Image (cartoon, rainbow, N blue to C red; front, side):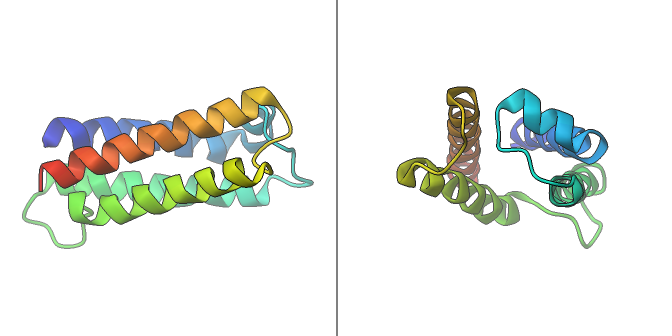
Length: 121
């Protein structure tokens, strides 16, 4: 189970840090629709970094209160995947094929992580 949590920590930290530091560039590279400002992507990056930090606390200090374990990550991953899949189904996900494939790949990874965490609870 710890390997799954470490993988999720690295994945979320990388995504969060990228969105936090270079929000508009990362959106352009992935083929998403470019917002007017980098505020919302940067805010999302900060939230994802916070989730990664909570997982880090759980892994390094198992007796500490306030960490985020698999039971908390399951609904986060499922909600994130659903939020990505719904616009794909409606056809409003991204203006480019690269963006739609990026969203689909992220949704699949989140679903796999959620199902692996469900299997190991």
